[in-house]
Length: 525
Ligand code: ATR
Image (cartoon, rainbow, N blue to C red; front, side):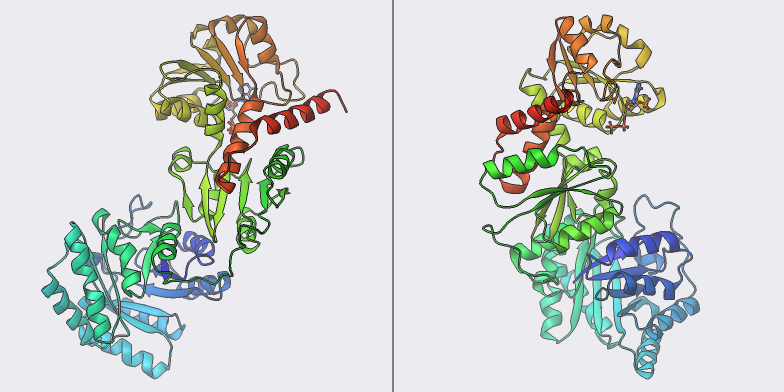
């Protein structure tokens, strides 16, 4: 079972997190010590409404056994919740029929027994977890067994022992508790926290630990070293398939693999034309369709339910979609935007091929290393450009109309900033327009004056409708080499097809097809 902790600071945020997490996790842990105004009946109710199979653990962790979530805002409370209030909450947990109530061994045998007999009297199905945490180190194997036996003597349903792992050996020490518990017929949750403990997090479920804690990408970890749900499931699938989730077999390679575009609006998108042309040239069954989305969370659930193999994500969902995925590729995470989703046996991973497409368009014409690139704009496309250029050894500089926004992006990449009206002072190898100035129907508008274009050897416009923007026409007239936005569009699409199918896409055919359609649109046919 994979459990995602709910560590949000307020009731409203916690409900939001539950609605997102409950459909993808096997269990959620309500950290009532962190959810300040947490109203237990409503939280449990939200979980039940979000999923009829998710299990609910209620925990009110003692401060001396808790590691506070990183970057928590506002700072979580550090004061202990009074014992009487905690017991009341755990009894309420039992009355409400939550699946598990967690109480620390440190609360004393009397309190634990009180809770167990209350549960029995109530004939509640709530299982009692007796837990012990060392947030600083991992004790010796002998000491760990003593602690285990102390927990065992209170006769709980589940024993949970979590320590801070500092060395590879600590992983083995904590993991050794699992076979020990099994031999004594006890259910156990055991793992090591911290970077060094990641190994034990991955291995514990395979050895028989009843629960593994994980986070959603972008979610707040409740302890250091927590892996994402996607990574955890992948480990299980690769090594043991210990935690099968309610899922039906994935279609085999011979069956149709379908793809979708999620955006709003999508009516004028050329992605379906480009991808369907490519899919038939690649002899692949399956179809690519565009959907105008109003609820991105529901759209992602649809991808899972319909076994859609992959998706393109476009404006305005490239950032929002991230929180609904199981895993995010490091480049997409660094960019804070996903334009591609790959569905591998129900695990959705987000990627970004926008920056790759832009870099491929540039690299087809020049070598970026050591060259200077003036980037017009400070939005998502400018960020992707600066990221790719810096990664390829080039030197970006940001030029933007709104100075604060431009300065912030430049500061992020440690590069110079120029206000748009100072663009004439810049001398760079390449000028890249990422603003929407010159987009159809603005056929006679350019983001910069034609007179400054002689300062650049190359000019790239990310706009591909029209194929030749006023900026590119001016640049050609000044003798610059130009790169059309069509190149970026084709290469980002080819990057998607490679991720979805593992095969190289027919780039020349895709370019020809989209170019012809754009020319037809421009000539009014
Ligand atoms: P994207 O994610 O595609 O990059 P965006 O986030 O909307 O799109 O960013 C568009 C960029 O184009 C912004 O930097 C914007 O400048 P401001 O920060 O000043 O708003 C720029 N832009 C849009 N219209 C513009 C115009 N008429 N003149 C100059 N810059 C413009």
